[in-house]
Length: 118
Image (tube, rainbow, N blue to C red):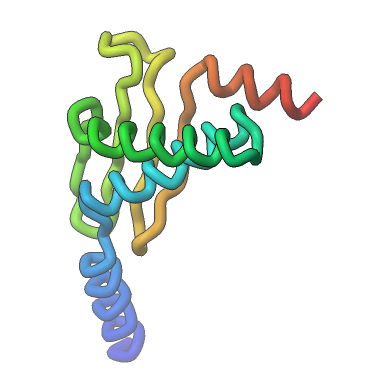
């Protein structure tokens, strides 16, 4: 019983310590934006330059359109892409253990992914 409690306390302390902040999310979104832009522009010199520039721009503004909810051992991030209260433009992530997991995507991105899969 004591061992299980000690393991639980250590696990919770680790998750608390590894709970990603907004700066971590900005870095993640810069890389994610670069990947999405590179897929759209193609893996050419111009495509890489445009995706790098676009990723940098996206990360510099992401904190203005993102709402972070901190639950101590994990955080949720809601990126409102259309600037309104419409759920179709929201991109949602969970940050836990130093990683980010996409939980919901905007409808346009879902449709694009579905078209690419066909």
